[in-house]
Length: 348
Length: 282
Image (cartoon, chains in turn orange, cyan):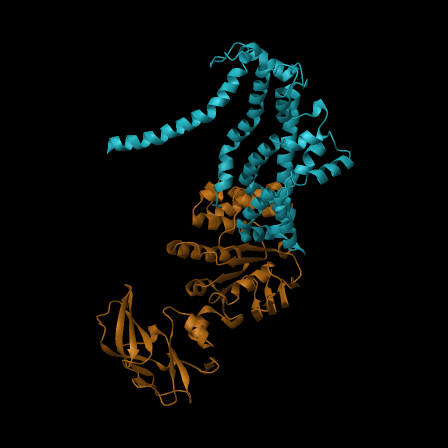
């Protein structure tokens, strides 16, 4: 049906600021692609260029094989869900959803059928005659999505659609968006700064930083094999422990197998174990500085050898540790990541 | 505690009532005067209760007119005033909405220059530019026409500014959503922007209707025929008579009638008016 292909897409603003520095990306038909990164990384700009709300300074953007650089947003056959919903405040829910179809001259009975269908899927039927003002945040979000799906576009674009919702609703809507996209099989691009949202929604996860793609791939691939220090630190919560280890090693840190030269060592908190001693892997000695219990697990914050860099160790369930306590944590060799400290790129 | 509260409730109400009495009393006297005959008023013995000539006086005022100075019935004057005030108010709103739309949503050369030129006209009300404006209207042979009466007063920096401020608070996402929904600029303007500014439009309508209705100097210059007279000028003409007795009861009836349309506009539009001036929530 429709794929999205970006080739060397760049955005340079009038002041000379380069917000997007040549992004190439293939999003297959029906794929859910999530762009994630810190604020200011260019992810929203990229999405808006696909939508046609920003001009493309360089490169090409093709939807379904057609280059759309110079095509108006309305003719790109896309639908967008905005962070603040952007519902027309003076129109009823029904009119909000029907507006785009009316502008395209869709026959009345078809509009009616499509709006009712979308309202049924999104469970907003009881509110069709209400104004957006009379709806809760979650309901408004549903209407915004309804406005997108009635159009049956080639591509859905989501610009941080869940950021305005409270935590509980966000998780619920996240699951629903995923279900909806699965059911409709519409190619989707979703922008978020929340890495958990990104991990759970994405078929293809794209981590962006400073206007460039750091790494793109399946979410678990990015989790298991981050290609750069940035991705390693960005994906996963709490973040991966990253320690710069000089050639001579660090006190309190035993590392039998390592690439030559200074390296950045990465190991996830959940891969550090207090008990299972592994002679070939990593062993670190830390002094606990803080204990964070969240119920199902406990995070121990500690300093390497008492005065070194801070590390986080995850312990399942409750922990009896107290600050000041010294402990040895180990990790298996296949759970260690090494990066070049100069380039930030993965070694091996 | 209870007593103190009552006292605190009572005092402001007393002040407000006194205020209302001071403002309303002259209006009441005018109304009373419009219900007596000329003799009762001019001998200075007019009682403070309505008299028996209400229907007669108002009938004469509206349909016949005074016997001296201006012979035009006030009905015609009211119609003239109404047409003038409506044209000015609606014209101002229409022009200002469009110019504010242009200034806020389009990037054209000298956009800010255009905006500042509009802004500067705030310093040039009719009174300041009265001679050149009169000359133009006269050269265009628009004297004694409604066009000449209203068009020079229609351009409005105030309304343009108000709408500009309002448009700037409309979230950009609405424009973007409209673009994606396939609405062009004018469709966005009529489908989204105008319905959203309805309260500001109402506020502007109230202000500008009263402004138009109260126009004195401009109609005085532009209109010479009796049948083009506006009510505000009519009142003035009724009172200034050197050789005849002023028909005070008719002048007062005219004053009351002249007051009614603005009052009706304010009362009807009050809710929207207040909302339009204070509302910030989108």
